[in-house]
Each structure stands twice: as structure tokens, then as C-alpha cells.
Amino acid sequence: MHDFAYHAPTTLPEALELLDRYGDDARVIAGGTVLVTLMKQRLSQPGHLVSLANVGVLQGVRLQGDGLHIGATVTQRDVETAPQVQSAWPLLAETYRRVATVRIRNLATVGGGLAHGDPNQDPPPTLLVLGASVTLASSQAVRTLPVSELWTGYFETAVQPGEVVTELIVPLPPVGSGSAFLKFLPRTEDDYATVSVAALVQLDVSGACQDIRIALGSAGPTAVKATRAEAVLRGKQPTDALISQAADQAREEVGPIADVRGSAAYKRDIAAVFVRRALQQAIAGAR
Amino acid sequence: MEQKISLTVNGQQVERTVPARRLLIDFLRYDLGLTGTKEACSVGVCGACTVLVDGKTAASCIMLAAQASGRAITTVEGLAAEGERLHPVQQAFIDMGGFQCGICTPGQVMAAKGLLDTNPNPSDDQIREWMMGNLCRCTGYYKILGSVRKAAGR
Image 1 (tube, rainbow over the protein chains, first blue to last red):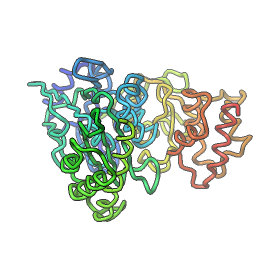
Image 2: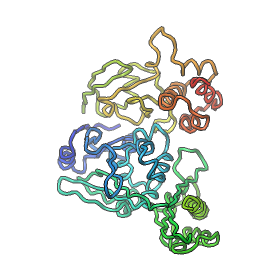
Image 3: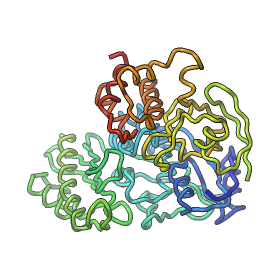
Image 4: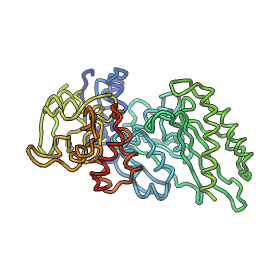
């Protein structure tokens, strides 16, 4: 591995000042599961690492009026196992439970995952479905944007030089809603998904879909919100025929690439199958 | 660049100055001579390098030694002191034949300890889910499952 300097500030202003000082030559490190791997492969060679691990303000999970505020350096394992997440955000707990292995989730942080911008990760489709937002801070300003605006392209994000992710904000799911997170794993349980699907459904008193949200991972340059598939079912009784129609619509909305996990056409077909299954599971949960 | 680190390894306070790029596994093996922890895949996937960081399993091959500063590391050498009785997890792997070539074994043992410290009575499904990322190329998985079961007192 190349030579670099390691900085471990204890306050956010200190961390941001270091990022300003070293500019393009600095990278933020939290759990390091991505960055250390990239550095070992010489795909990233920053001269300065700024660790956020000792910045206290980025730790902890707090319940506020607009939802759950998860500090950027909270580990993915701590989200998965937090009792309040398991009881009120079961989709979030289930999604983080499916990320890699325990020993990776013990290191990998929520904020690090968001800033990595990898469309093959598990949390992005779930966070789109839950309408999550992310707060970014620089030495100049603090801003909050929906996660749909965070991921701008393949491994590209709206995070600007000098900015860090400080927290993830996840609103409460709609009352009485059912949800599902499914990932297709033909190789091993700890793999990236061939295709993943998050779905959330809330039914009205007549049993029609009052609120419906569908998003897919590993299915495009960013996680994909399947808005046209949602429209097929919104306000309608979720019959088997309409669920299949929504799944067929999702097949047309995704843009997967061919790779070791399958051809693009195969992944489109898998997307349709898993959207159908996720909808069935979410609807059953809502009933 | 050099980095001063201060951490606990197997209960002993350790202070060293190391290059910032030193990986935790290399720090353990080459700086401290604790060669029980093995490196295999080098990208966090196989589990051979598993150690406990503040009691939680971690992949030491994709963690910098600098990241471990201020924290408590437990390696397989820390489970039983020299000349003392083996840790129950180690003894269970011997009793149940939970290893063949042995390269993955320190990681398997540390992963199993991490599980039992968290959940002393895991079901077979919980053992499988927890241990699924620790690969054994001899494919001795049933014996490993049996070893963890025995270590849990079943």
C-alpha cells in the first residue's frame, strides 16, 4: 500500500478543516471496509486519511419528530440490532442484516455506505422506499437532501469536496404498512445481490393500495425507484393480475449491466420475479 | 508517515509507532509476532483473519492498525494463557474434529467466540447465519457446526 498520513480528529470542525486543508489529496475514513480495500488494490491513493471514528457528534441513534436520526459513523450492525429499529423500522433492520457478514457490518458504517455510491449495496433501495434523507456538512454549510438526490451516477454522489455525511434521517413508515426486502443470491449468502428489491405497501379500508413504493438495487447506475410500476397499483386492489403487471413494468424501468452475476436481460427477468414476490410479501404484511 | 498507536492486545497494553499504512493483521503478525491470525483472501471475504475488536468480530486484513488505536483486540492467542486449559471453543473444535488443514481455524474459533459471547444458546440456523462468511476450503462445515454446537453446551 502507498504511504499516507492518518488524522484522527475528535470534533467535526477539526475534521472539516483537515478536508479543506488537504483538498483532493484527502479521503474520509470511517469503518474502512471499502477505502482500505480500494487502497490495497491501488484504486485510491490519497495522501491523507481523515478518520471520523473519534468524532463523537457522528455517533448514536436519536428519535426526533421527523424520524430516526442515525449518526454517520453508527455501524451497520448497530442499526440492524437496535431495538427501536427492529420494532418501528423492521424493513431497515432486515435490510442491514443482509449486508455482507457480521464482521463486515461490525466495521462498515451507515454514512460510509451512503457516500460510497455503490448501486449494488443493499440499503439504497430500502432507503428510497422509506423516503430517507441525508445531511451533509462542510466548513461552509450544512444541507439535507433526499437520498434520491444523493446518488447521481455509478459510484457518483452529490457529496462535494470538503463535505462529509453527518447523518441519515429515516421517517417512520406509514401506519399499518407492510414491507419486504428481497435479494437474489445464486452464489453465496454474503454476496452482492444479482438484483434486490425493497417494497412497501399501505392498504386503505377497502383493501386498495393507498401508498405503494418499489425500488431496486443492482439494477442500474444507481438504485432505481420503479415509479411506473408503483403507478400500476396505486389506488387499485392488488390482484394477482395487477401485481404481475406492475412486475412487468419494473422490468422495463431497470437498466442493469451484464456482469459475473448475469446478463442484462437475465437481470431484467429476475427483477420482475422479485418485484412480484416482494409485493406479495409486503401486501400480506399490510393485511 | 509514522503513526503512534496505543491499544490493548489480549489484555496487554501496547504502544508502538508504525507506518500509517500498516494493516492490523500485519501489525499483529509482524510487529507483535502473533502469527495465530491468518491471512487468506486479503479482501475481508473469507474470515481467516477474524479477530475481536472491543469484543466484536472484525476483518483484520482490511483494517488499519491506526484504526485499532484506543481499542481492545483479542486474537486466538488471547483465548487461553500459555500452559493453561484451552478455551471451551478451542476444546470443542478439537473434540468434534472442527478442522482439517487448519488455516481457517483461528478465524472460525474467533467467529464462534464472537457468536457465543453475543448469543450463548444459538440455534443451528443462527450458527449457520453467523458463521457463513468463514470459509473452509476443506469444506468441513458440518464438523464446524458441531463444534460450535458443542461449545454452546449442546
